[in-house]
Length: 375
Picture 1 (cartoon, rainbow, N blue to C red):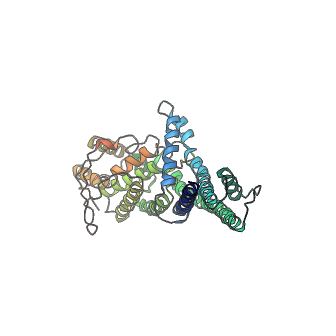
Picture 2: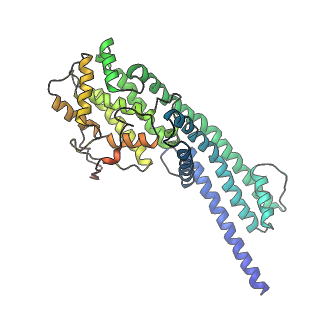
């Protein structure tokens, strides 16, 4: 009977060692995917933490509050999640090494936990017996220091990307107002004589979108970092810029703008990549006449604003609407969905509508075939 009990205990110890090693590998993989790997790889640990914390923050920042109050609360969401993340990794490593210590003969389980915590946090108040356990203690302490070093190197690059994003978002206010609108931007540029040179701005925003795609997919936490001012937001700015470029390409009476067309394509590709990470469904091959969230009446109201500022418009405004909608359909769904995800301030044609009301047709085209939306 005693032999059977001994055999059962050793079987449990082997299982504990295997589970501990697997948990160490799992935790390190999560840290590498989040901090080191330069691509949009999802970690179960990180995703679960952000979802759980997001639920808590949205419960606190409920819709009964004013937007400014909600914005103040949600501004802490991403920083708090990032500060908690290394703590979660450390806790998982401590649990993993507790299993390994106990599996290798360190009894009781409480002592194995104390040694694991002392080693991980380099407190040194409990020294494990035997050379083998001391070596394990060294490896655990090294992992703890490594996680801290990763986070120290991670945060500056994260805030560097945030600062690059916010520079143009802040500059947009002087051009398009706050929150930014297409009509304000084009009217102001026409009045001060900058409308013929608006392509220079489009070049800056093309670079901005390229940087946005890389930084906000490899570091998705940036999506939830809010602007210093509550009425500014990166997705609202993105929508205004894309809509403005679409109006320049379709409606303003001027020579065709290749810069505007390239900007739109760069922008909707970036937004689609970010939306894909968050599991937002969209039609990757929309037809130019597929429904969009902006109505013809809303477009006509924009034309009234532009006429009031004497902005030159094309004669065939029916065709201009079809052309503009053919551009908008490429990014309409992902723009409105991302504005909802980040709880963006109310802004025209982005965060002031619900994308769920639009039917979704998924064509799933061949990867070699270009999208049918206006190019």
